[in-house]
Image 1 (tube, rainbow, N blue to C red):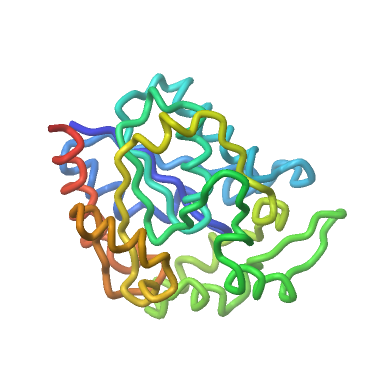
Image 2 (cartoon, rainbow, N blue to C red):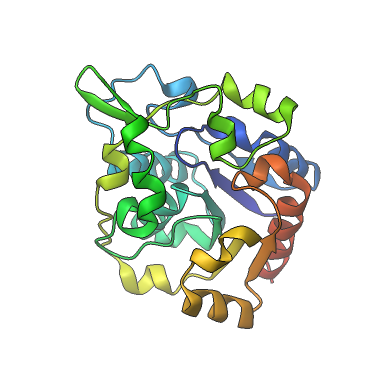
Length: 242
């Protein structure tokens, strides 16, 4: 039995993993899908002080207070920034890292540094509320930005997406325990369409090591292809538990 912690990306919440979480739980694994501060059911919290480090602390605190160990820590999109930071803070609790069509940062990088034009394109469409710059606004067409086109899925997402503080995306990742962090096994589940935008060296290394899965679907692959994502995570669990 493995323990999974599933970390969502920008504008989402733990809700986006419902389908994958059910499948993993049905297979006998422990699953946590926390919502980061300021988003979804935690969107009532004051946004002024929320940044990347807040979200890193959210996940590190979950690991501590639930006393989770040997965790397979999964991060989607912006969640790749978060899981890297959280694993750095709690390396002794992590068995492996899984980047789910996610950012792959190094020390001192922000999501803007990693994702460049993709995330910058969201800024002109944002707004300022109580002095806080917000992006990824939950508009009618917002699900399309995440590669979701099924009408039922789009309707389900519209009422759950929330705006995201821009500060999270420009704040630099601060790593403190890099030797132990980078010794952790890393796996990559990505969308076929994003292969061309990724670091060729990273992709080649992951593929050669058998640590790469690519799924031909949109960016929110845990919504559009939950079975394929779950199957990849189950393979990773088998490897991790050996």
